Amino acid sequence: MTRSSLLEVLYKNYIRTARAKGLKERKVVLRYALKNAAPAILTAVGQSFGSLITGTIVTETLFNIPGLGMLTMGSINRRDVYVIQGVVLFVTLLYVLVNLVVDILYGFVDPRLQPGRNK
Image 1 (cartoon, helix red, strand yellow):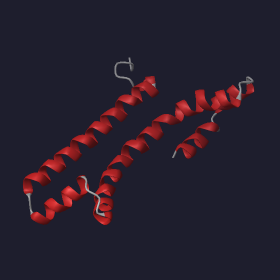
Image 2 (cartoon, rainbow, N blue to C red; image 1 turned 90 degrees about the vertical axis):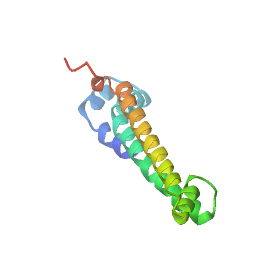
Image 3 (cartoon, rainbow, N blue to C red; image 1 turned 180 degrees about the vertical axis):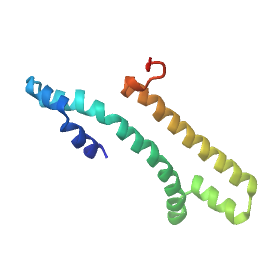
């Protein structure tokens, strides 16, 4: 994801202008290209977190590793509704928290996305 975002940004006019000014390639990539590719990278990381949580259930069940996935599967097999509700609530809160952190990081990465700056 990082590579494709950077390749898309590296062919923009402002990157060509920075190179024409004689800036070093490292500075062009780190300061201009990576800064403008960061929102797409943050989005991919935030959205892949849901797949990561789902993958833990499969991995822990498959390899018999004790954890949240095993707790979930054991509770489903025992029909323990309260533990299932607790796990679902915990995972949901974790997912919302990760998305909140990603949204807050957008403001640091791209100041144009900060609230109150659209005036």
